[in-house]
Image 1 (cartoon, helix red, strand yellow):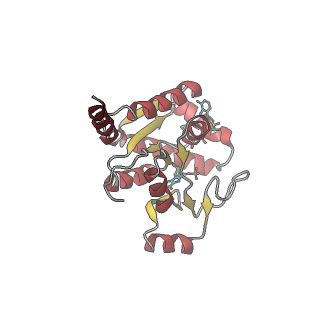
Image 2 (cartoon, rainbow, N blue to C red):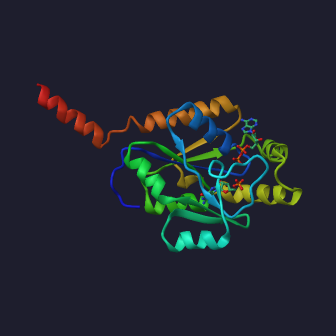
Length: 206
Ligand code: ADP
Ligand code: 5GP
């Protein structure tokens, strides 16, 4: 990705499986103008997941082709499956002034930071490990073995927190959503190129 200043902002949300990233991103997409990027994955769809909405479900061959064609902004292998962010749609939207949120794993987030350090990196934490286990179990989509694998990764994952700009503990969902929304608003209040353009306009008026 080139270093032009896009009109839209790129938010990257990561955190342990079950922390509530998906739930928070969904609320953000419903309640603000921020749009959720739809990833590609080689994982099989879970019941209720919709092609093109939850993910673009694909084969390993197609995924490899996408990598070779340079079509992915980032990609990573997570719990034995490939996941990646389609690049062209994200760039197109940012250029048009739309904010985009990527809900991606930590390896993927670090890769985005390499190519696009202007991204805003947000880490979602659970209030406790007990609550994390309860949430993953309650979701009912993983086997006992998959749940234990995801939980065992958590401490390793949180060790990357210093690479992130913001951290939100998802205890009360409404509060967590409000905090993420306020991060979006704060980022739009940064002194940036568009503010200088506004100041130039003032000069024409005086
Ligand atoms: P992630 O995307 O981080 O893996 P999910 O968004 O799928 O996590 O959330 C995991 C489960 O926890 C879901 O069943 C979701 O409804 C639930 N959940 C999310 N946030 C909260 C919260 N603040 N309080 C209670 N349950 C929550
Ligand atoms: P799940 O299988 O539960 O939907 O997702 C598993 C993990 O993959 C989550 O941590 C999620 O954030 C991550 N993930 C989803 N899409 C992408 C993506 O496009 N790129 C990367 N790097 N990770 C992703």
